[in-house]
Length: 451
Image (cartoon, helix red, strand yellow):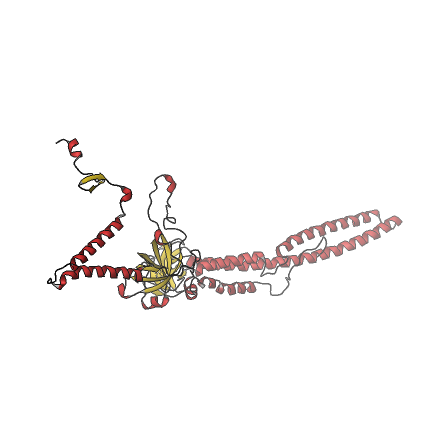
């Protein structure tokens, strides 16, 4: 038979058999697949129950038990879903996360000692790695010597200001005497008692003295510009030298690398003899007293999710016997793809619709964490109950606990690095100052001719 003849007899996929004939299917008259499946199961149950009721009187009693048991089981499952499972959303795309403190050196150098090992417990401020500090110690001694020389130089500037003032007063006194002699010589010359040459010489001495006073005043202003309004301790030249001492001290002090937080050492990569720079990661310290869970829910599951809703969690570490209880703190302001290295660009023409996931931050009960400790990266099964929807999604309740703030989010160990060198700087300044007290503070310079 030819293909054309078979085409009219073979039923097509898009046709329904009605009354022994093939007719085109009406898409609008066809019910959804889930509804059709439910109707089919219900019809079979009803037919089974009717068949059991019409069983003969002498038939065994168990012939109608099977359909009734199946019907009761389905009814029980339905009631269980309505009472216990309705209003819950679950995901296994969740993991434990927390703070990870990187340990890096603030200076370059050679590692001479590694003091800790991975998985070891360390306290905040404990030394983890030591660097060679000989070069930094030499630079510190040089900076201290420069500070001492600078203090002596500034003391000399104060003494120079005082010396110029005395010379200026001396020259002003000489000018007054020259002017007095000039007046006398002019009167004697007019009467013929004194020669005119003496009067001319006196006039030139007055001019020379005036120029000398002008030069001394200019030199005094230049010297006062370096010391005016300051003392030896507050002089900018001394402060600059003191800052160089602090920089050298920090380079020497930071040869010991401390732990920024208390926790457990992980991923140690440093070895004695390594040449390290401030960019190299030496190890990490993980605090285990403050954790939270990040659960990635599908976008269609977030319509009723709000901050403050209760959460039940299960960890694969302890199995079904241990439950954790938490609360939704807030939702990330974007899906994971938005913050990826290559965010999506749907306007390029190659758009493919996929279900996005949004990270949700979940707070854990610290008492439960203390009884059943967790570590970073563990998988969690998360159940969120949509019982509370009064809070807006834009009103998160995320808050750092006070204990975790002091332990993991604040480190004061770096503020004490300059405490020891401050006293050393003051001692160097005092040891190199003028002990006779002949270098008082220089006030601001006045007008022309003023001291």
